[in-house]
Length: 62
Picture 1: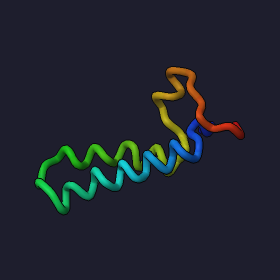
Picture 2: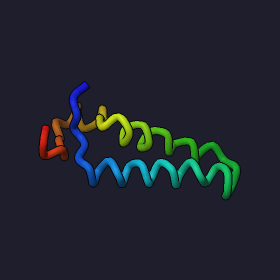
Picture 3: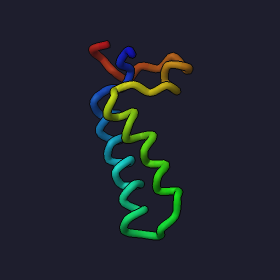
């Protein structure tokens, strides 16, 4: 897998993912909070499949 997400992008994705998952435990007990897994995983692995499809790279060193 090639890296295509920059540091700022990764940090924002991880924060957003954790916040959405936290909604499941703190806020309303709905399944919508589990949608936070997608930004969390893409932030941790430094690769976004949608970026690959669209040809976007936010990683300056890549």
